[in-house]
Image (cartoon, rainbow, N blue to C red; front, top):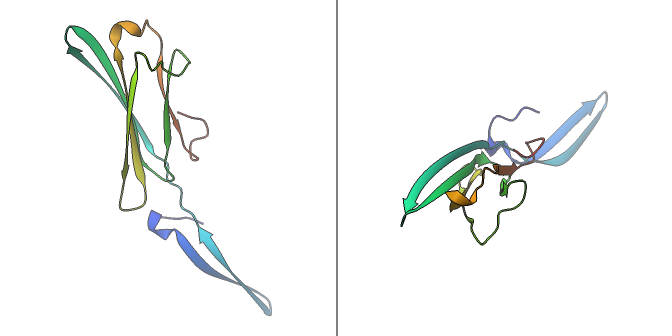
Length: 126
């Protein structure tokens, strides 16, 4: 079945004919929409301390995407890293999840910072 919009989600009455017999049933169609993943990096200085903020957004997904962070392959420490997340619901039934990881630049120590987006349409987390 090729679904062209999120609005196609709902209950359907299906009827099938086979020679002299007709069969019918009700089906509920669930629409799944892959989010668009966007990442940006910003730097700022507050009281002579340099900070970096990495913003990760999963835009227009259905069902809701999940976002988590890894620093050097591990979840970030609450002592030095802050994470702020925000979810926006759209009128078409999709949602956008945005998450910002903020930390003092000197604490990163050349480790990789990874935004992990999980969603049923993504074969592996991105």
